[in-house]
Image 1 (spheres, rainbow, N blue to C red):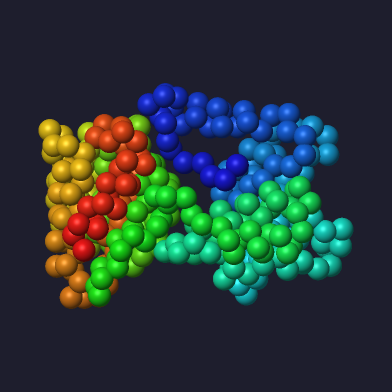
Image 2: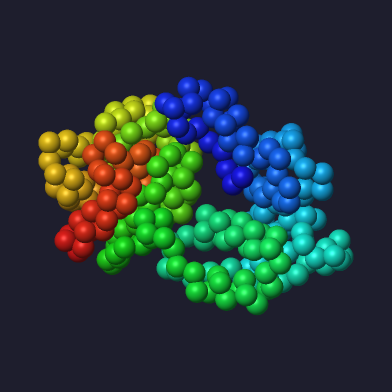
Length: 293
């Protein structure tokens, strides 16, 4: 269980129902339950789950691991969960620098890598194989991938960020951002994400059916951030994305005199209102950026 945040509320009806549905996956687990220390609700639900006798809870953390965790010490990924003498020492598995892929920011990627490392360790995979796997890994498309860079702008595709929790991780990766957001909100609120990251925002471009929810949150919590409504539902998906990217680039160029700006597609929403899926949304973003650059 890697995280829990409001999502799919249009389907589940409430956050409580959504939590119950996710918690059900833990029932009758026989071997290991993995959780992130930075997501305390996950550990709590694992402790409450009806698992088989002997099932172990294994934590991961992007900081120094406690006993029973996999974590990071001075840039080294270490295991304090699976070795017999784990109370006395930590086993070095790889380094953060081993993680390949050209991603834009270490935090979320390292967190995901630690979970993969812990999962591999549950299967007895040796440290040398884990290191090789991290070195050869490549990110899947549309997951915090830098698609272009100019002297002052960086364009990042995180179309897979279909909820506010994922989008918040993307926003946290950059200091100054023009945020492309909107789509199908699935019952989510945007107040928390805007409040948490308003100091990073130098502009926002909105699109999609529920874009006004994003605009309303920006007006409440970041009224000085310039916002462009780029939505043109009668246009083709490519024309819509082309207009969106150009609008975002214009805002970014205005702000670039104060320092580099990231144009970030992290919509915090599902895509099916204007695009076939998040993959098409990301592909068209990349194509529109390529045209612009």
